[in-house]
Amino acid sequence: MSNMYPLAPSGDGEPRPEVIDRDPLGRFAPGNRGGRGNPMAARVAALRSVLLDSVSPDDLRAVVAALVERAKAGDVPAIREVLDRTVGKPPAVLGVAVEAADADGGPAVLDDATRRVLVALLENPVSREVLTIAAEAEAMRLDTARTSR
Image (cartoon, rainbow, N blue to C red):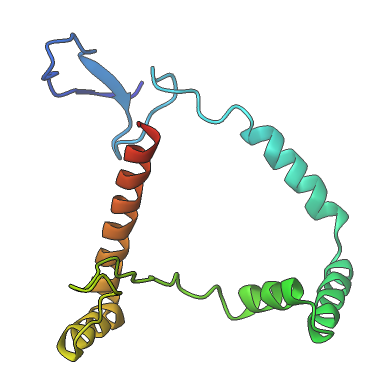
């Protein structure tokens, strides 16, 4: 049988199961009371196996050659696909929008020092990631506020 590990007590006063079936690595063990897993996994694996058995290396070479020919002819989606699959997708671009206005009601103009700070923040991968997360959180907040009206 599996190892039994106690769960932490519930903070909301609701009773919790006293034990949960886990193996020594902390994974759910067979027969646990957790989810059954993905019920479609076996079917998807069988379908993927059929697909892989149906496509030969020569078939794949022909498909790739046709895609490359379309890309060479200027087909933009084909170009994008070839580049995405060979070079890799480009990193997400963080757009910076200034919604402030100056005293006259015109668009705000950033001074050189502020512009240098923004450029430095956007060039640093860590701060760019933090800014991206903050921008996504603000967009979700605005979207939630807009839909709850």
